[in-house]
Amino acid sequence: MSVNLQALSFDAKDPAGLARFWAGVLGRELASDGTSLLPENDLGFTLRFLQSDVEKDRANQIHFDLTSQSLEDQQATVARALELGGRHIDIGQKPEEGHVVLADPEGNEFCVIEPGNNFLADTAAIGALCSDGTQAVGYFWSKALDWPLVWDQDEETAIQSPQGGSKISWGGPPVAAKPPKNRLHLDLVPSGDAEAEVERLIGLGAKRHESGQAHTDGIELVDPDGNEFCILTAR
Image 1 (tube, rainbow, N blue to C red):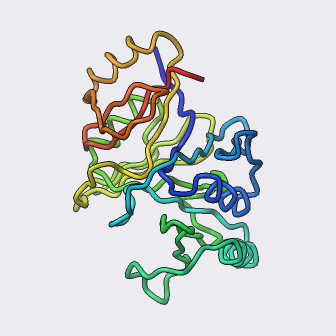
Image 2: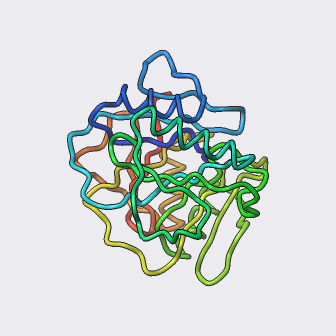
């Protein structure tokens, strides 16, 4: 039994508008539904945007670190994001730090990382899904996805598919207080029976969950830190 990372889903007030923003920033194609982006290659995952009227009142549990091949490439990504409706934000970054911190039109934070970052070498345009979370949740996701740990130090963890692509990282303590429902969540597709896969994940530390805002195409669970994710039952 196994699961594959199918999509990263955003709650959005304007799903189509946010999909257009990220399609423009990443250079990805919009899917025919107008509210999701096709993977950038066979190793990528879909970005999909789901209708929600819940107000954003804190930093997201997950944010993107976008890669750059050169300083000119970094500047071009930042300029493209600003032109499409993004904005600069201050999260306490220092002037000497080389990355640029932005937010998309609905306030979702992301960073455009300077070239030469060793951690993001040989990843993808979305170099990492940087997550707020414990060491234990990094271990959980390594086993859940069968992705090896590529970083495990000082309670910080990161995993990556054996085939490459984007990393998923967790920053360790202190972990911020969780909102009633995260605005971003992972969607997984089982290779076999969905309920059997749910039971495997529960054995690893997940729990069944009903957020009251879950979408109807999957079985909702939470990881050991309480973060929602879905096992998709409708492709």
